[in-house]
Image (cartoon, rainbow, N blue to C red):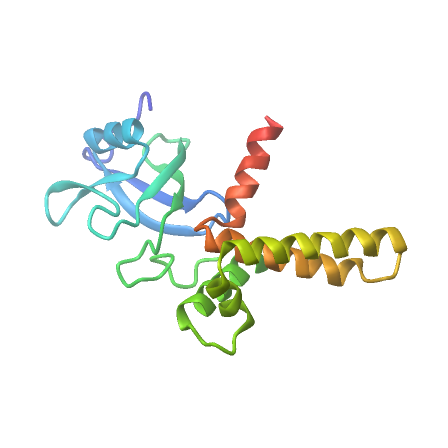
Length: 196
């Protein structure tokens, strides 16, 4: 960051943190010059606590760090917008955002991943999702291969089931990714990298 107006903000510049994918506003923090330099060099959002009078990196105790994707300053050069990925709830109250009703473009796939995670955690033997989880990655991979074949057959035979079979395939892919502690946004990031 060059030429920020530190004097105008008495050495503490407001930093709005926004989810780099959903654009949900996650939190507002303050940075002094040192916090900004650390944030830029480490890749994790670091702030200056006005109450504790010290630097702190988001997630230093919870592990829910904010991985920086981009830092932008406003037209007056006295406010920052930081696009980041949160690695867990941002809010100390265990919410994704400190702004409970902040708008977000979170899509159904994100919600479905959360449902899959909750099925894993609930360990209900009557849950198909939990049974897949319990059977392990090899069984999930077999099921994924089976579903991919069914999509292909449906497309070739034009039996009108391509959408149904594709939904089954996508669901099983998400189960596999979550079993591996990955998610669909990791796949989307890879696709974005390939398009550059």
